[in-house]
Length: 75
Image 1 (cartoon, rainbow, N blue to C red):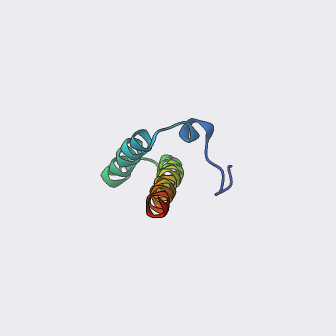
Image 2: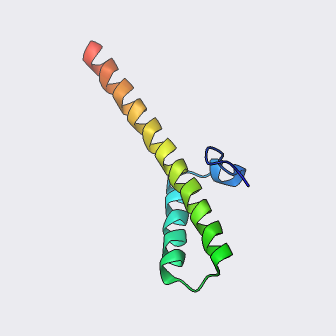
């Protein structure tokens, strides 16, 4: 099993929007129930990885905005 800090390669290549949309589908599937325990755990783990991917994108976007603001203030 992958460690908590690892992200599957297919998730690493997703854009923010793709990861967010898939995360919504995973959450919906979990909320609907009907999956086996093993399927639910797999969905949960994928959802966690997707959420991490979204967070990475958002942190990167914030850093870019902060850098742009700092550059604008010094010019």
